[in-house]
Image (cartoon, rainbow, N blue to C red; front, side, top):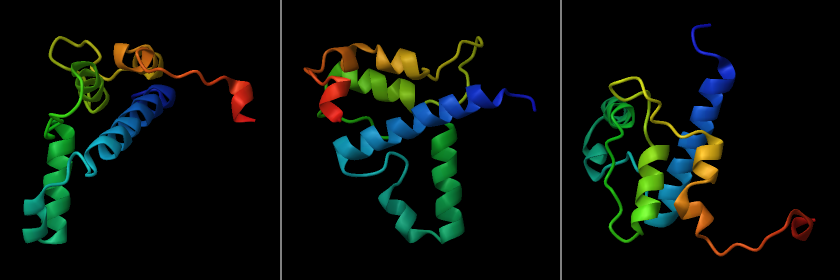
Length: 112
């Protein structure tokens, strides 16, 4: 195996959470476009995969700059030029300013 599975799965988990967060905020998937309906299923899938690999999604206008920055980091795939890791891992996403600014007062005991 070329990439350690824990690194790959952690990136995929963060990316998936970014897709879910985008869908909750926008009411639509980040990489799906209306023009996909005019294409064959195979072509629509290819188009969506191309958009996923290049993080080509429509940025949300109705969210805070912190939320937009979090989504941008979570929806990245691969590494940017220069070799720095673009995909925030769980702790980077968890400690992001958007997450830490949320008024959440939930303790683990409250979920029992």
